[in-house]
Image (cartoon, rainbow, N blue to C red; front, side, top):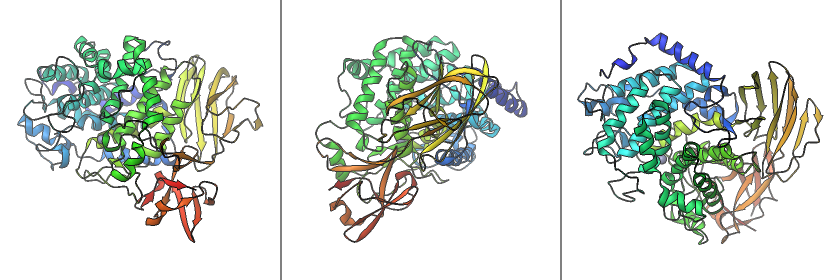
Length: 607
Ligand SMILES: [Zn+2]
């Protein structure tokens, strides 16, 4: 088979046009391509990327910057190590860092860049993203060689499964979102080429500290999706073999805690495979495992930001290890990768929970988005990326020591996924989960509906949703009333206050026949609260306001010794800037996500 032949049916212009048409067509049916869950297994459904656009605010600002950033990467540089291995002409500059021939994991993140570009392109309808995804898939396919191995050789790549999983992610998104023709065939060829290198059974992480490393258990989610997409049963067979049942999902489903001491990110992203396994296999243990994992992560592992895993390792609970980590390391959260796992876990749980009894999954999703991934240092244009977030006194946002790390791939995917976090569809209506300026197109009972959300949240407390159904349509709008609220939320419909109950931690529901121009105004008064780092150190607290973590800017070395009367002593300077007076000094608090090059402090001693 001609490895270059897959795209010859389409010239560039017709390819782009087809991709845009395919993206537009997806808006009609709000189900993910490849989704195999029935209504009972997936009572709330994600929208497609194409259905949702970010239209302003801090999330869109980061989203737009990274959309442009990944679009600007050099295709020749991205493909260089692949072409070198294939013995092909390899023009362009070396990437450096992890990515090159002699790097830590050569070529590891190519698939994630393709995935991120396809996702950005699907939501923004930017044809240049689809064109770049197409060119990268074409360039990758040309390096597969007669045995379809491409870059994956036992002698040269210590992370076969890890890299292969990213190849699958990129190819799946290129096929389903960028409509790159021939990609299904490439998926099967890549699997066939890798098969002789893959273990017959999944196993827990080998090489925790030293090579060889690998992670079979991160793969089943993409393997199940590839099985669905290609019809090739080899993908589904491998997916079942690689589910980390014995070490992770069985203990979680029993209510045990398998996390302490485990590598944090890889086990957290493995939970996405449990979510997919529940949709595909219908074994309730996978749903139980997800639910218990969420409880453990949010009550025993998590910093106030929503991050976890100091030194990439889950702590042993009830020993004050989170507190101890503040002085023993500066590597508190592997942020882009960890945020990818945490946001996906939250979305799976939102999707799998019938008539959500509470908002805890969405509340935590919001916490993670605003305080971890939104708060990272923006990458430069030469392979420097954020990796660890630091919660020690006198912290700074820094790049990782080596270029093109794992987090350069998950940064693209996590931010490109922002549109998926905002709204979910149920059989009886629409769930509004995050409050950020955006536009949604969906259908209910065959009626096309547009929804516009306008807000300055979290800088301000109110958000306004305007609905425009093509014709009057009855359904329920569910509004998240976050669990952190301490003052009453209020809802106005077309200017009139509604008596709808607004209990913190529940969804407020409004059922009516919606007409074009109907306007919902939801007000969520944000106030400060202090959150202890762990139960052994209740006096060491982070400062939260609504979903947002506030940090002290340019703290003096003595600040960590001071006992502060937080939050009662704070005075407002500006919408997201507050001041505390102590010992004759003024210390300014701002959201962690607004910090740039300043030093900051995230935890304080409470008076
Ligand atoms: Zn990473």
